[in-house]
Length: 221
Image 1 (cartoon, rainbow, N blue to C red):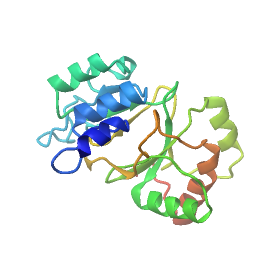
Image 2: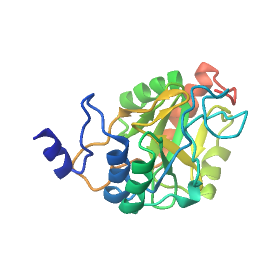
Image 3: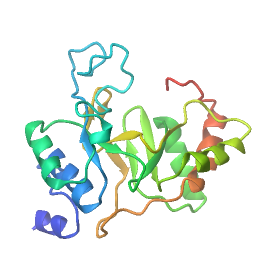
């Protein structure tokens, strides 16, 4: 009964460990929410970086597109099911921008502080993706011009703040990457064709403020 209700509300079915199978989650993202996805590079615990890609300096192991690349991301359910049937443990990578959400990401500890501050300020948030090292707040698609104007008005923009816009990507739950499990810190609400997300303007001031207060500015974080 639980799985039937989940399907009716546009949610992927649940696994025995209370999480969705990657193939079902990827199909929901693509076919129901119209978010283009592509398989990520496989997690390789034996590799020097924890990633199966050939880059010896990979900084996002398993959390980036593999083969095919991000330009192949699709909302076609048949292609998505074929990909994840062939590679059932592949991370799910969202191609950000276009008609899909973009994201603002920051180090995990600062992300928790930013969410708490946004809640205190009464800011409505949509889904928030949490990896062990970074949290990402999903926002509406934005242009580079829009983003440039926002950042130009700032006295200082910490280098640890990252923007996943047009042409970018982000690993989605329930991916397993070289840095660990990717989960929802704020899960999408059930019952809609596509989750609501805020404008980027609604979150940038707060995340910059939190990162500036905590002094987290190193680009590798």
